[in-house]
Length: 619
Ligand code: BGC
View 1 (cartoon, protein in one colour):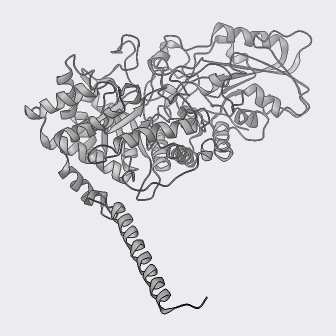
View 2: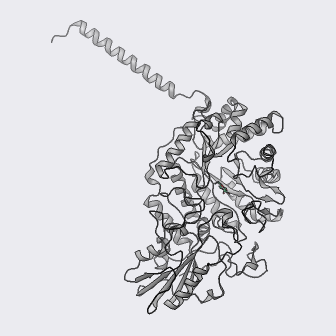
View 3: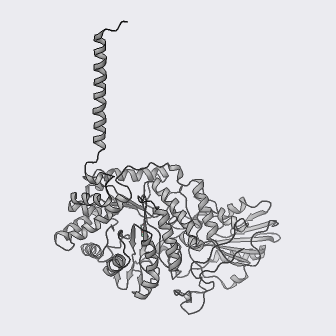
């Protein structure tokens, strides 16, 4: 058809309209995207953004930012924005109903969306315990507990563990991790020995700083914040002094010894501060007769002024409300002492009401509130929580590559304490017998803080390999028999391996007056002595255990700590594919009389321990 001039006019008009429409649409899009306020503008420096946001906040909104609430105590999702909650945590075992990678991500996203419905759309800081990987999630990479990393003494390894933990935490939407644990355990009766890198301040400082570097990354915009804990002197509590009726030493009293503070307890925290740690968690115990969370001296004079810490000071669990029977007095004392973010972790309504009242009455100054909120907001901006986030695939959580690092960490954590030439296992070994309560139990290997607060006994973890399983995998032509009690029939096997250990536990539940082998395990060892030519004992435990008199007769003895689900790392060393490199990160006492151990490494009785700190054989 012949085109008339009129058709041309219509065509031109249509094009003009289309272009105008597109311009309007693009401008509307850009306008919607454009920051409404300066604090939403990612190109501005953090200080300016913080100042701008702070200047727009009401007192109630500021107080909300100081509340850290356990996700299970949020009564209704609308309370997240109604109370302007600043931070949420998954306290031990507080997991989504669907405890998978997807379930975690969705749970955190739902809470974040709720926070973004608040007037100023301030995102939440979501905190988790990930002291040995994101151990809350069965599919995640689970590393040996810190005591084993302490035995490895390997900073580069610990930095990698931190970096992997960070990537997995980020993929699940959880930007804040409550580790490293920098406590120095002097008493093996304490149930938290395994969370630490040992009792040497220098080693703990080195490894703690490496973990912080790994976790937080070294770029200017960090995505995960670490929290060094438990400030300060936790690990030196007096046996029997716990303020918690159910515990014995955990949450107890650390003598207010300023010499020990300077020489022992502070150096690891100084190392973490120098490494740029973004938050520090205050211990639940007492410094002499003052609750740590109430100590202006420890928080202001020492942590802020002396160590120069600028980040967020967070209290631990019910730490602030343990200060006094009166909740108002507790909140006022804790905040005035220097707590910025209060792990309530339950009653946010009461907290908001009391702190409002305290500011109005002049019991807490407006500038103290501003100071705390400024630090919290700075962390949130630094973590990029206000800005577009990078989407990460869920597949990296528990990837084969990450688990290979966990397996390597297991190998490096093993400490060889005795060896009468029986290790490494010879390729000519024809027959092997295996026994012991911990031989075929990934739950015992993984210890506490694994999916549940107190851990889970048994082989429930899908991707886990028990030590027995790993021995089978590497056995070659060696025949292997297993009997938990070590009672075998027939002629002796060439070698017997007895894997003994502690059932999983966490915190005060693990306090025990008798850290020693169970009768069942001792009998299994004795039974093996008549069933095999030589006997290798492997101890899976969160701490050194007091050994029986006849332990010298065991042909080999290995401290394997709590290696986690990658049992292959133990077999790699037994079969000689990898060397023993681990060294004791704390002294191994000979008897209960030696407790608590002294900083020098000697026992309370003035005698040497059974094995000194730093001891470990090799081949
Ligand atoms: C522990 C902390 C832990 C916190 C949150 C407390 O009971 O002492 O180490 O980070 O709970 O789960």
